[in-house]
Length: 289
Image 1 (cartoon, rainbow, N blue to C red):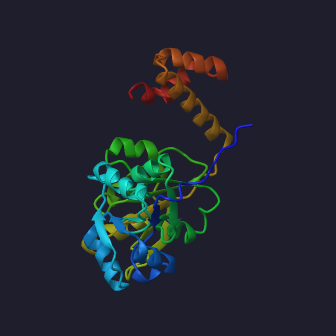
Image 2 (cartoon, helix red, strand yellow):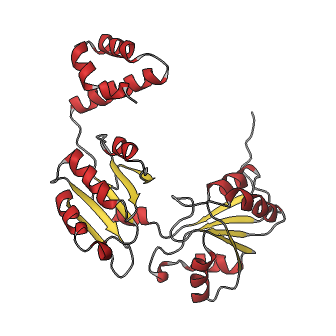
Image 3 (cartoon, rainbow, N blue to C red):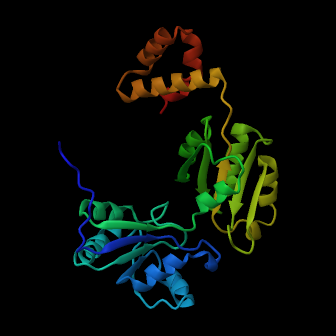
């Protein structure tokens, strides 16, 4: 019997993945302060931003920038330090590294090199929004930031899900996203929007799309600031919704495997014993993708 070893190299350093406050500086954990105070170097998304936290808690450890534009280059250097036995802390501008922030590259490489990766848990805007929603904790999917391209965004938003959909949105795109949601769900559909979490102007409410659109359309300069976390509650799917979803997924699967659209429709109709003309009309948009 082959025995799998899960032990990491004890002579290597440890890569600490440290969550930092998303707004209120006092949300940092005691353990995070201790780790940041004792590592050899802190790899941070923005050294200027992190310096404020370090100064506030009297942390003297040196910093090095580690962001999406230099991840590959910095990763090699930091891995060498870890192999030499030096401990490193990875932090992002706010919240938890690698959650829609840099971090995956070095964390993945550390695992490949048998280097210990240790999370120092703390603040996450996603978890904060979920915990204050009242409806998402049992079944949800987090997808990070929505695509910038409107057609791709609409493809994601229009799918009826049996789970709550959670995503980030930037201030300059939030009105467009709310408008697209109104077209898909209607203005009375209620969603949760959380912004400025843990900050002075924190706003977390469960309102209709019409109400949110009206609220953010007024006095944009003041209200459209900070990162938005949006939660669309899961839909209660009917048997028809479930069947429609299966049919669409089946057609997409066939198209991805180079089956022509016409042949895909014939196969689906035969399999599900459905009227061919109705299926043609309903899923004609799939042929254009």
